[in-house]
Length: 510
Image 1 (cartoon, rainbow, N blue to C red):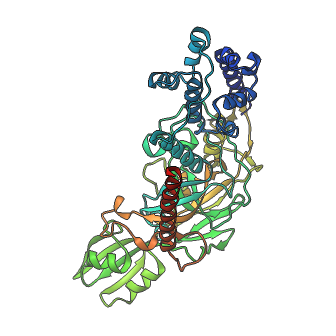
Image 2: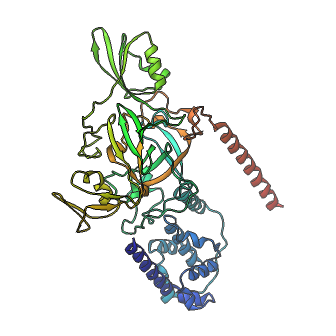
């Protein structure tokens, strides 16, 4: 971390020298002192005064993700203040990231004309909208759409969530130089070499057991940068220092049965024997089940055998009471039967015959824990030591080397959290990729602002309107949609804005 901060400090000072060398003559032409162009922060303060932009903008010039856009705006305005107002000048400033000012400073040496009279344009409005949206997305509320059913039915496929990043403490981006919203367009659109160490701003609350949490997928093999990894959403069931165990499909924490929040809809696998074939239309109408949530396994005499991958307790009771159902039983993976995720690497730990229904007992490490290491337990900690905490690890028989030194213990550097999906048998969670490091935590989902089920599943309903503008993670099973109030507020705003603009134009025409 010290080396990373040193590199950033060197880069910052180097840029200040470049800035001063490319603008000192222009500062003199504007009636300022040449030395003012070389003083960090003060030089930008003076520059903002020259282009007549708000002084608080200086904060945005050093805000990750937003900074590159602000610097482009600054350099275009800076050139225009010295009479360089053509599209060619603006493009040269943008393409060279301000280095075009060297030519102006040493060759043309233009006079200071002051900023031109600014008028609202579509491009200016678009840039402002992008900057504002980037600030909100990066530092306050992050939108995400749920593509899988691992939290079904607590969180449904197609739910569009607003994720609160502030209350726990917003995580400073690891890759501060990149295209805004590139995770939706091209997640490779960032400068990989310009990484920051893990930093989190202070929040006012801590994560609690039973919270629904959004985090960066630890086992993402495509992206090494943490903030470029896929965002996952699961329920936090194991806090740092807890012991986790699944026995016959039931979850126990510190030896006690885990009780989810009242708005959680935990689901399990069942085998259902029916006298008749199930109608897909009725299954969707009565239970919200679509093809893929169940499969016809075969026949047992005259009866049909189905496997339902995710039934809640309420659904189970409804099936059980049906006159057509002759038998329904829970499907539980036997003890000592190894179970893998989507690929062979997705099973934590690899050296244990654990599965979704019979798992552990597993202790969730916390910061400061001193772990005694040996060849039989190293599998539990090797990802933490090497992948998550940045050490080199080598195991040679019974000998363990960390950063080139032989050792038999290791001190955990950060807290870890055990995550599980409410859809217990269709969830790629900590049972497969291990506990989630604290530096992977993004925040908590606070609102379902829309549901676009049809984007991900061939469901009869493309939108589930009753889920629009509903709160989640609040321990209240009786969900209420606030969609009407939001729509009413939008109508009132646009009517007010229409008359405001109309009144303004009337004043201007007098």
